[in-house]
Image (tube, rainbow, N blue to C red):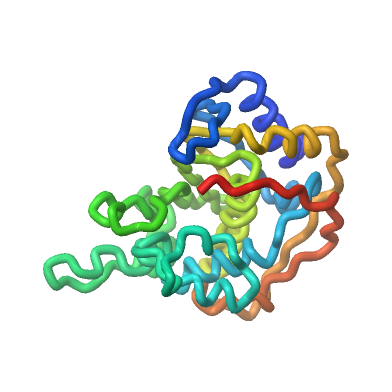
Length: 270
C-alpha cells in the first residue's frame, strides 16, 4: 500500500468512525485516539499528491526549528506564514519547538542549556544502538509561556544493524487534514538529514498519534481530496557535502518530480 493511501485511509477512518465532540477552538471535530501509520522512505518521499503541499513552508519551518529560533521573522522573510496567527506583535512565540530542541533548561539553576539535537547526533555516532536517542519538546514548566503547546512533542531514533535508521514521532494532537501532511513531510525530511550527517540510510517514519481529528469546517475539503487519484510520489535529495545538521539551507534540499493536484484551501482552527 502506498504511503499516501495509508494517510487517506486514516483520514477516512477519522471521518467515518470518529466521535464528534467539542474542542479547544470551538470548531468541533471528529476524533479518534491512538493511531499509528508507518511510512517507508524506500517507497518514495511521502509528500501528498492528492493536494499540493507548500514545500517551502515544510523546509523553512524545519530549518527554523533546527536554528533554535522562536520568532516568526525568519519564516516571514522566506514567505512562510504558518505561525503568524500565534505570534505576538513582535513576532515572538515563547519557548516553542526551537527553544526546546536547542536550549532545554536554558535558565535552570544557572546550568548550561541542553542542546538536544547536538546531543542526539553525538549519541548516534558514539553509541548507535542506545535506546536514548530521544528529543522532546514537551516541557511542562515552559508550556504556560508558549503561544501553542507542542503538537508533535516527542521523537526517538532507532539505528538498525543493516545501516538504516528509523524515526518514531509521538504527536499528541493531529489535525489530519491541514497539519498531519506537513508533519509527515517534515519528519521524513528530518530523518533524511539525520541519516546523512550520521552516515546511515533513512528507513521508516513511524507516526504515532494521540488525538487524531478532522475539524468540522474541513469536511468539505476532505470530500474533494478523497476522490482524487494518487499520483507518483516525488523524490527528495540532499546536498551530499553537508555534514552538520545545522548547516542545511533551503538550497541544499531538492524536491523533484512533484506534480500534485491543486491545493485545497481550508481554515486554520486557532
